[in-house]
Image (cartoon, rainbow, N blue to C red; front, top):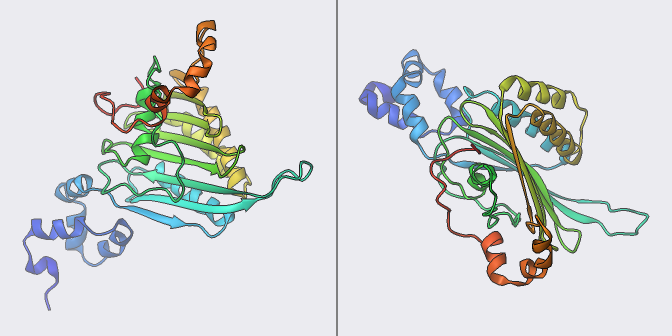
Length: 303
């Protein structure tokens, strides 16, 4: 019996191959020289690039397994030629509180997502709301607002990004009560250089801070990630701390940097209006419940 590529025109065969999951392409590639030639063709590469990316969600069983999977995804992020789907790792677990203060165990939701360039097929909500989906630092005067939408919001909202770009987003959310918080950190490949962003949100008191930097060369990123690879972190909490240290090392080599905080207190007049920021619903909605995408022009991380 003839194989599919012997019975179908070349372009039809390429179209069939281009919709296969990335995880199965390696096996298909080895079936024959003809199929291998199809997959190496410019037509096939373009078809794969234009196809909306499906998101694969993996729920890690333990923190140790999640660290192992996270290291694999970081390696994939740093290998643009690696055929990867967008992948999200999720883990929810209890972590002991401070025994001296007799605090109860708190549930933590931990995540890591590799977002491939191009259009994502559809948005897949996180298992727990990070309370960052509505956040819009609308009064950021520098490149930070564009960097925020190009990285964190691109992942959370499944917004299209350039085919040459990649976003690695990871962090955690502590659930419940006054001790709740959300932490998100992004490493971005823009197609020509790297950028980093860190966001910490206290949802109980609506305090938020964002820092970012860009124009980072690959050499600096690889040097920082090599130290991360050598770290002995066995829990995802320790891995997050090591990853943040790696981002801080990269930031030392950035060509630009920016930061933003809420409430945006810059002078004594702002301090006199502190209650307005917390009590005025219109002000809160303009920062934390922004549902419409702002007109920021074309996708760009920062400048």
